[in-house]
Image (cartoon, rainbow over all chains, first blue to last red; front, side):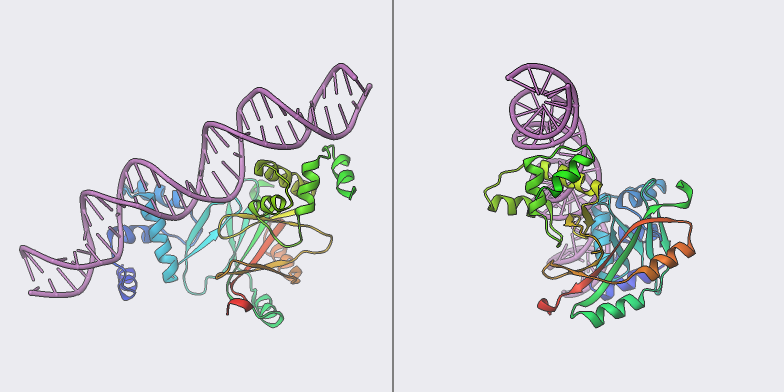
Length: 134
Length: 134
DNA sequence: GACTTATTGCAACTGATTTGCAATAATATC
DNA sequence: GATATTATTGCAAATCAGTTGCAATAAGTC
């Protein structure tokens, strides 16, 4: 998978083993830094969590990854694949995060009409009790 | 303003000078704990930030105040007045937070239809550049 | 006014994230 | 391919928001 190598080098970043590893650990469901470190450790890959933080920052800048801040004050990162914009259902009991696709173009349109604010991104999270915990 | 005194006592909480002070410092635009402490200090009121944290927690439980977690990992608190549910426009440049009222009942309805998730609350934030910073 | 117990404020702790810095490794240069 | 340049890594230490333990204090109760 040299897709990531090209993307990095085009922007003047170096392509390193660690960046490849972090990239491979990413999924389209949100993960914390600790979870990413743990999943790499499971594959016998030792990597410093500081490196993971910095790598994810780099990926976010490149637009490869989205970072979402959750209520419990930890951030989660997920792979951004084209046209996968979605929202989150966060369970107050078990803390699980489900993805839900929702067409929010109506809201965006309304914000642009109502204000001078130049919207670049948005986040929509629902909090409550998941099906499993009810 | 003994409104707050009654609300507290009805639920078995005590009405204290500090709770009154924190309540008076609250506005309908979101503030951090540090900002609340500073605004009280400006009025020559000395209060421990731990007390402010605990007081706000209490107010959130009573439904008087809403707590919103922002991207920069700090929480902001704002006064909940009946029927003021709204969303936020967060400027990436200056960090300012504007309120915007938006009818999102369509989205809520769709979530309830699409999933078994029991929605209790939600937060919708738009990020970008505010009119002032453009 | 005395009693009971919630509340306060301080200090110390936690857990996520950041920073400084020397060692290392990726690219550019010869 | 060897060498120079500079981004990246990993460790330790620092930071920062928020939490916890506990003794002193003050609200509401009798």
